[in-house]
Image 1 (cartoon, one colour):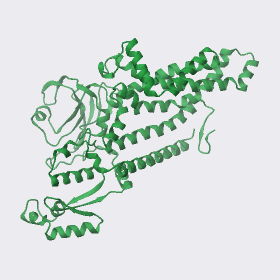
Image 2 (cartoon, helix red, strand yellow; image 1 turned 120 degrees about the vertical axis):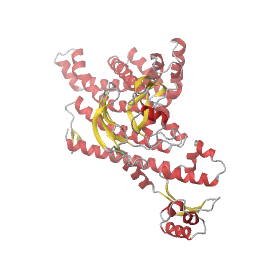
Image 3 (cartoon, helix red, strand yellow; image 1 turned 90 degrees about the vertical axis):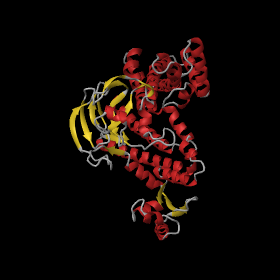
Image 4 (spheres, one colour; image 1 turned 90 degrees about the horizontal axis):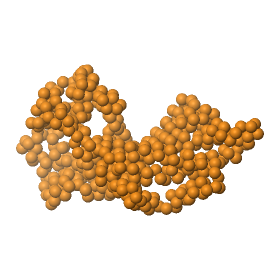
Length: 499
């Protein structure tokens, strides 16, 4: 396996992801009417008949979401006069010389000029091309936290430095001042024990659902009720809190309780909650479903191949045909009915919550059912193909018994294409299961993409599309690498790819 080939495959993977994202940006920002994003926005509804306030809110929101560039006459006049001055008050009027200059300037730049209904003041806007919108999004995707990340006009004397110290829980930490996060690198007792806030992915702020929260926070923050414990803050203040000190971020304005707890402006934080995050819930359910699928699908597939055309093979084919022919919605509901009736298991995940093993059983098994059938089918096919190969006949002629032939030759060769699909199966654990999670009311990733589409949460749609496409595309490359590790006879080369 040559490094040059891997580099080229990575490069092609990145290009594939960029093409997918361009399609997503085009669909989201051109085919969906931009007015639809306000359907779920409570702030927009509260504005009621205030036409100027509503126009200001609409265009400001569109600008934040990257639809257009928006300029008000007030912004233009602030470059000429002091805010609140008599000159400023006269300049923003529709019949002023400054308003006419504003119209000429921005009309020459290709902006559309319009005015507020109530006041008559002018504003200008210009749509942002899709390609530029995507480039802007990608340029802000990776953020590096430095001592100059925070720019707070109300705190001009903010010290900017990095130094080593300890977290309130006793962990070793690289601490920043002027950085967005207080603890850039820190240790604690939670796996993987060493954590960092230096490099972060920035997918934007969710809107209109989960408004004000960063997309990654929505996906990775724990759910449920706050899990409190005795905590001593840096000021010596003691209380019950679920604070996660490693998440401390800069907060421009402190309230009374903030000053009571913290010695500086790093007072924004996340709290530990009783349930896993959405992505964590889907991954837990997916990984156990995958383990169950491989644990049952492989041996049953081998059994079907070894008992070809006999009872075991016929029963296995009945199961495979049933899973393929019957809609997944139908057999999941059937399995849920059997599980709740015969085994007294909860019909929905929320009955006992993630802390009870019984909550996981039906969703995990339901999610594993189609994977078991697929693995049984393909394992049977690959094993049967190997059993009919010439080398098996040759091995028999040499006097090897059936067990030796199967264990040393047939199974090893048959398992190779199955192993290639393991990275893709792991990738599927992250994306979640829409139908299974919906039926069992599981708070996982499965609901996120369809929910974001229904609620016109374009920021979330773009972020999820990037995550899902990146994981899926890279899993294909990972599958090829696994293939070379399982079978040394297969190599990846720059000329032939596989040889």
